[in-house]
Image 1 (cartoon, rainbow, N blue to C red):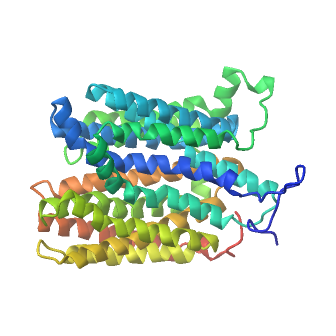
Image 2: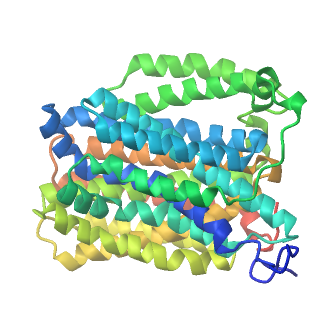
Image 3: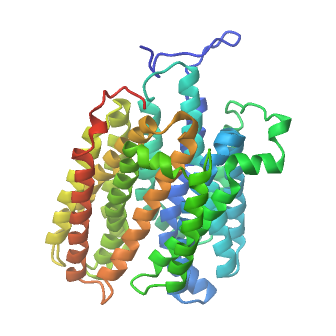
Length: 472
């Protein structure tokens, strides 16, 4: 059996590099880290932005929600485009969008410009992960591998989740040293480097002239389905973000858009959002749900617990960032060795159990809890972060059809964003009367329920009992 560690490409001249050498994987890792970093780094810049632009702090929340919304819609769209137009082409286009967004935000003079910048960054960073999965799956097929390249998926896991946990402390250092504009401008040097590295990736197959016209491309990517999905997902996210004050207009748009979109997709031979495929591929559907539930827990800690530590426990922003550092460190340390073994059932079970333990611990915290108790919760959820990302990402690779890995990977991230958005909604409800110990305990109860649901989705999933090397 050939593995990613031993398989080599056909020699070109005198060199015979491994199929997953650093030249191939490094730009994929850098690109995939841009979305989580940008998702969390903005948190430390909101107050300085409000002060400098002379606006209310609450009005800067759109800078968080706009990236979430753009990413939730763009991830599967980028995956579909990668399948049809070529993953390298879409990957490069995404990096350019992030570069433009970074410059726009760095020069922005009002909230509107900054929001546009965040949308551009959200659209651009959304291309990286699904494109990376398409290129990795294609590379593995060319190398004749019959197992997921675990070490490579582990690197993606670190880029995808561990970096999110270090976003706030990095953001605090950047904003403190250079000002809030560098929360945007920091993307410029990173994307230039990423672009130079990505240009060395293997080129995509050429597009046939018959397949390059707008109508033909629109048909192949199911443009109508993408538009329907975008309207449906946007209205759903807007409705969720408005809770506990329901936005009835957004809910109405969701209902009106969802029905015809579903009918259209069911009638398509090759739909953008494969409803029949999700219904018949239970392993993939359960993977999406587990990811959403566990990320609900992880981001509740990153944002809800963080808010409580500062407002109720009395920690400074720097101290809070240091408490969260073990979460990212543990996640980074565990992700790669776990992924290298191509394990699924064990990691996803550990993610659910650790989430349960961490959620119970949150219920026991109060304003007088010692610092080590807060660090312990951070450590526990670091285990949750690593195991859920590694286990579910490998499950995704195995369960998704090879020709749909891009769209499936994008939907994987979309479900993760729904979990993230729901965590902010739950946090807002728990702390609606002010940040308090009681609100934190309510949050803990909700996370216990979510952890139990994730555990049931694991222990009752028979597909996880298949041989670990099998690729569905």
